[in-house]
Length: 340
Image 1 (tube, helix red, strand yellow):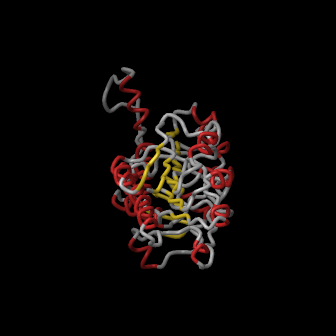
Image 2 (cartoon, one colour; image 1 turned 180 degrees about the vertical axis):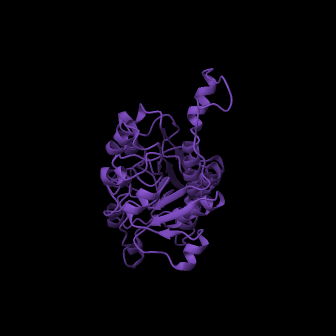
Image 3 (cartoon, rainbow, N blue to C red; image 1 turned 45 degrees about the horizontal axis):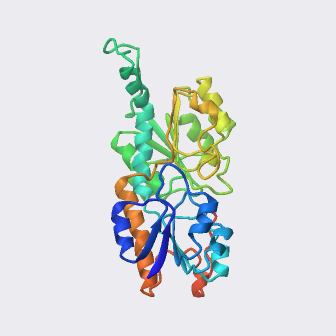
């Protein structure tokens, strides 16, 4: 039987399917990440590794797995895998085309609404016994209808966010490298293409949804943030390095913008002390979540089952889906500008 290692517990339905394929060892803790020392020891005799985004499979790990034949990853880009090291050993690495887009778009809009309506603050406000009267000026949010949503990066996630916003009677403006066709813009509520400067000046809400590339890293800087309305709200569910957190903190602290909702940060797991800069944690006008944009139970189950399916295909001598290093199969390498 194939020896399979999983570095973190996975959804029960996927774990049950995986148990049918071989001898499975799972690192059992959910309160901490497996250390590299533990990982190096665990993979020594394993044939297959189940990859999860928080656990790097670097060259040391891949070389320590002396019997390794295949890596199946529960991720769409898997930049935490050393593809070159795997390829040198003729080990295919498979992932999955993004299965999280709809979930991430839904979460993005939920974060936007929660920030607009100050839902975490409202929950605390009530629990602390501070609710004294109705229809006062004591606790005010902002509605969505009639407002302008600016979307930076109108790819698949951005377009799904736009469709939800249209349902709330919002005006949609956007920026991306190439303008959508008139037909595509019409479907998205007659969305209007804008320069970044105009988008930041006109928007009541700005949603950041671009991929992290060399061009988008640090894209949202102090100058762009300074163009936002005092009543505007910024949402980031793309990647942390897209935005200057220090410039955002200053704008929020000085109330030059109304608020922000952040699910991603410049420092994330597995780096030490993941999360936003300390100053953001002290502010009441920002909602902070721990990179849970794809954490719908159903979505995570689908992702894990797809990863198991690729293992099953490999064991049945079938090519796995979505191979990251197709040169293993005599094909051209994938060229991908996404860096995170």
